[in-house]
Image (cartoon, rainbow, N blue to C red; front, top):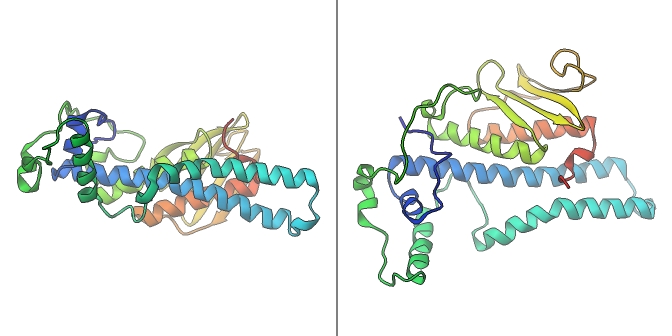
Length: 266
């Protein structure tokens, strides 16, 4: 059993060093964090894709669009591009690729450089944090307390690494795709359930039995003011299923509110 380290503070050197170790907990937590970062980035690109897709239908001939419409389109594209450009600037040459690939060797090399530049010229990554020996080194400052069952189907302790990664991807991506969204459930009776408030109205999304649904306003589950559904295979496990979840929710919102939900919060 590997505990939930999603709230573990790795901002101080000892914890950062441990997170790069071969301890099984560290390996699993690195994978979860990579998946969360990939989900965030995937949602940014999904917003841009949905907006450009909307434009193809709303403005089939851009050359005949009014000046005001052209300015609005350019402003929206610029707003959607800002976080993507910031992401690219932050990642630099280490732009995210396959989130399943562990870049720990390169990360350790960068960590060694940082430590040497910070005043420890002879620093090398500790040998006791490599290989089987690392399993004996607990994460500094971490005290394990088994949490009660949450709405996310099962505590992370009960899930394997790949399924933790799927949950991390979804729960990082959906609030980026639709502001203030809250993922209630991944797995269980309805494979995915999400709620939120949009333009002052509650909304509810679920995807099960090959149908993805979105209700907004009223009682969003049973008597919504606005409703859309699309047929879509239930999300598979792991990251391919997580990507399906994000795409489907984006398509549903774009059907009811194109493209206002794509604008970043001011």
